[in-house]
Image 1 (cartoon, rainbow, N blue to C red):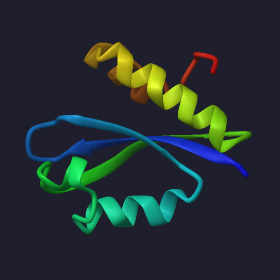
Image 2 (cartoon, helix red, strand yellow):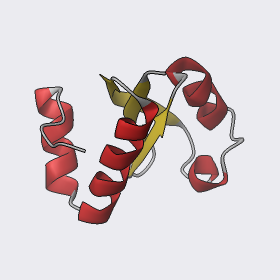
Image 3 (cartoon, rainbow, N blue to C red):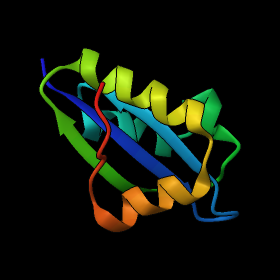
Image 4 (cartoon, helix red, strand yellow):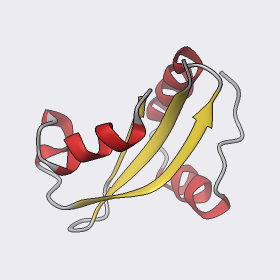
Amino acid sequence: MKGFVYILESLHDKRFYIGSTSNLSERVKHHQGGFTPSTHRMGEIALVFSQEFPTLEEALKIEQKLKRLKRRDYIEKIIREGKIKMRA
């Protein structure tokens, strides 16, 4: 099963949320509908980046690495360049 890493941005305060999923469109709808506790308080959000990976497992590993970095500049670079350049 393919996987996706995605980045959402709060339109209110420009915070980012990083996630992974096997069904990107449904997951984004879930976030935008306010059904996800971790993004519910972010207000209106937009999908600003997504990248497909061969497996959901690989996407999950990349998601965890990005979350551990906690570097806004690196996340902004990924969005700007349109590609995650790290390995699972």
